[in-house]
Image (cartoon, rainbow, N blue to C red; front, top):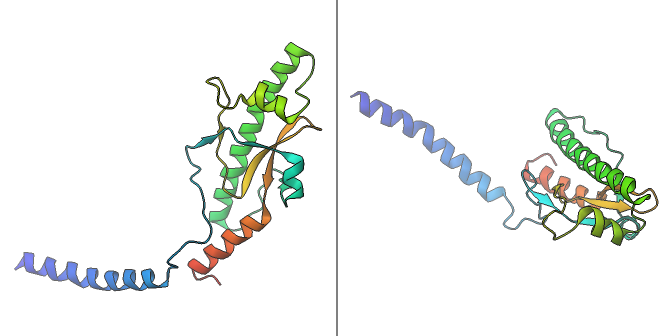
Length: 167
């Protein structure tokens, strides 16, 4: 008798959940428009030249947290701190290079070859940023920056709002 009651109870909870899940599946778009990338635990050696990226709509971030919603603040803080840690690592390596050579790398190409060392075993692996942000090198300031693409960020936010029923 007790087994039968448990089965009925389980069925009573399972049916509404299955119906809810089926309804949610029907509302989801069949094809995701914005392709995001995994970031947690991932690394990259991709650093873009700042000047061309600015002409394509990129903007240098200020490195501050701008979210106001509790969950968004957590994600924004994580992204911001990951970028700050990457910048500190590059500053340290640039300082060492400058101490040994008397100056910092002058061009984007020198920076990539001498500091990032892309494709080499001793190359720097930077933490992956969200798909709407990229690392960039500013040859005038001789520093690593984070470039954000507002159009990509807005497209993702609009998609999430629609998917979650916020709009």
